Length: 252
Length: 369
Image (cartoon, rainbow over all chains, first blue to last red; front, side):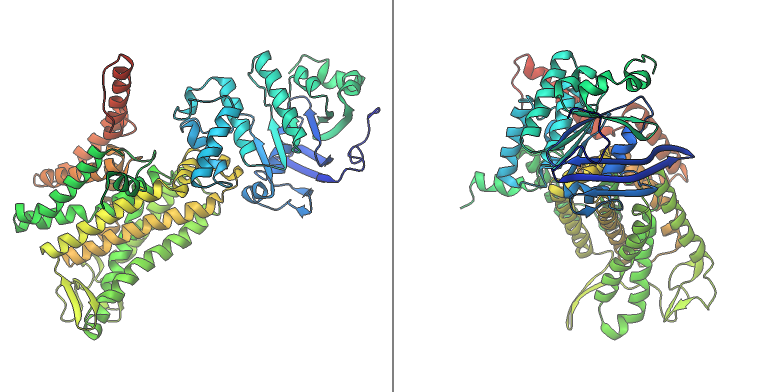
């Protein structure tokens, strides 16, 4: 953990949960993801940062399957998932919190929670699970409200809660703190760390460097669809080239 | 012992957040409507009863569209394809088998299976290719108009399936020897066959009973686990797939249910009037259901039933004066879409609920539907 290490070795002796090998995806000639290699160990928590257009969201779409790779392989545990459909990958244990909220704005909070929880519970157990979830997400009393009437932070938590209700082995969080207040951001960081302690492997895309620092997790820097650098946040923060392409630049 | 709690538990299967109404007064009103439906043959005369039967048998088409569009977000402008195909299949099989078998059981089953098979094939190509929204709507319109165009040019004697001459735009069976009307529904086995003559109260009760069962069945379905997922797919198919649901398969199944219901309308239409021609595939049966469903409120089976019967009645009143019906119905649709895009009944109930909530906030005692 002391040096910027090439990807594929950072997981060390831990069994990998996700292995991505020479993955490529082009959109109309632009290589959004370019021969990318990335390995994530079981139980790890990893942040992905990079300038806009670096391919972060495309990488997530490739992992969940809403975008198909042009070439390369994605392995999840013992499965080659490169050609699987989105719902099949979800069944294997990959869940995502989308960047622009994975919630159904026009449905009630209860209905939103039912969609993922129905996989695991029925009748009375389902009611109990909804109740527990509402308490955990600090959304008691909102169950019959439409999600569009919630505060922004509440929507974000609901979105994270819905991804969690899938009981995933690998959770992808695309900008979980976007639009949150500093307090809400800190609370979200605590939730993410608590989840990780329970054994959920987490991959986070985040622009908020305070949040990344709080997670104290290894960071992967993407640039032009490739892994530009990888290592602990302290190292990455001090990395001159990374500062040049991303951190130091205020240009968007 | 028939206790209140028991009735309540039994009713709970039909209740849920997807449908309007769950209280005792609501179900009382439903019982009243069913009672009224049963009383209709005793209230109105023969001609009006036949007319009313014609309205009620279109409820299957309308409820099917409400189910696929209002609840699962699949707008089809070609449900007439399934209605027409159901009617034609029933007629063709019926003409060929009625003498040998003495009943129309096989014709009925074929009339249901063939349209559902077509829906399965079309649905497979549309949903597994992840075709969306407007493309499904337009593709279905093209399919139904292809059927109409094809059948319109089958007037020649070479166009026949066994004894059944397709008859071009004169209608099915017009040129078949010894046939003046398509077979009415004769259901049963062996000697135990009952003929539901299209103009009889028995036929009306058959249609009405099936409509009531379909209404309750769909209400149960949309409030079940699959109902929640249908609505989630309507709101956002991609999200729903990321939550582990095979959206394509669910859309395909829902689409087939819609086709089955449209086919019911087609078969009952033939059993009712003894007649079907290529206009069954035409604009009337494809676009008007969209108006019936949209005007009442596409997300509500209850609103669909009420507005379908009302608008069919209105069209018929207007039809006496010529082709004004279409203009008026189109006008109603435009006005409703501008003032209450969720439909008249749905919007009114929303408004009432909001008004009640405000009433409750100010301490007024209020009821619950």
